[in-house]
Image (cartoon, rainbow, N blue to C red; front, side, top):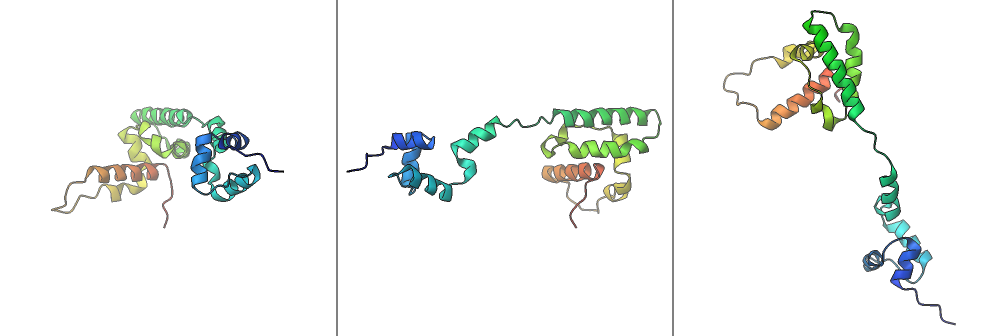
Length: 164
């Protein structure tokens, strides 16, 4: 007795993928004669994160908002800036400020502007190195060099460690 013919559409429904996806995978070597053989091939040959099921699971996961981290860092920066303007001491608040800065994701760090006095306090241990005049004949910094310097200053202000 012959086995019933397994069409790509039927195989696709059994695997949870479309018929065109079955066709593409078959062209890559996936067997189409049984659901079990196709499942085994997919498990051995496909990146699990590229499957339809994995994409559906990833879409259902809520990515936490960065608004809270940015708002927290901004509120602290504003508060410390006002204290500094009023001539008050902020040393006890610097660990909280650095922690808030570290919590801000890299791509959102430009969203936390800080006053010049706050930058000076946060970078106090590094100001000598940062304020050295350029030797005569030095070319002006390029835009990318300025951006990298900003990243470094932010990381130093946040108290982040650099790899040795």
